[in-house]
Length: 269
Image (tube, rainbow, N blue to C red; front, side, top):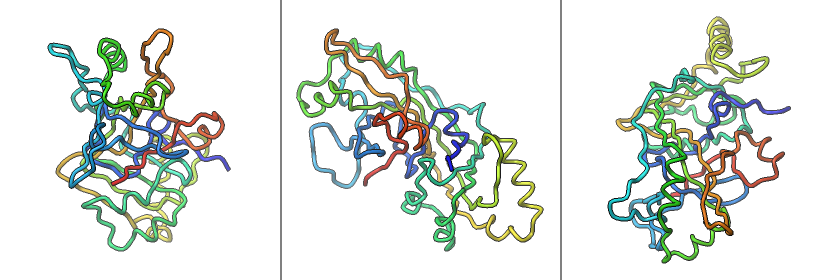
């Protein structure tokens, strides 16, 4: 059975396995293994990580010249096309195990049961979007020069192996619960989810499973989904462009395309 892309994936976003405060626009990513991204951590000079991870950004690889204008992310804003609920099916690139390591996650013993589910209802409190214009990124990287003291990453850059985050969705609070009883015909949508919630609430036999949940409530927003683009290098013209094909929206799209575009993000600490 084909996995249906949820609302987040329909909007072109990819789930982050472990929601985190420090996943921001302009963060650089590389391929860790087939189907998995990782952030480039620490600094590009290869220093050994100590107590805090410093994910490298665009400016780590393309240092800003004096008096040069740099691309800047937008202020956080509401997401008009996303009402805060999504239905996630197993195999859609979402990794529930990553949530167990999230600080301040509250599960009251329910994690083992929720992990067994094949579908989850994800609810976000006041989700916000922070993004950056990819055109501004292209202009910047073609006006500046990459740092020549990091040959290993220069090789990855020239071989089109690096990606850059352009959009993030973030929230200060969310919950996730078993949604095995949900049966949606057609595409997953906000209206379809609300209809399923009404049906589950009316069925007392299903209330126990549906109310087992994980919840998170923090003082700072954590990023739960991203868009990222591949940085492409033209070896003849010596110019850079951002691939307009974003990270794959689903495992099936990843497999059918034959291209190494991972369907999820794994953060290695």
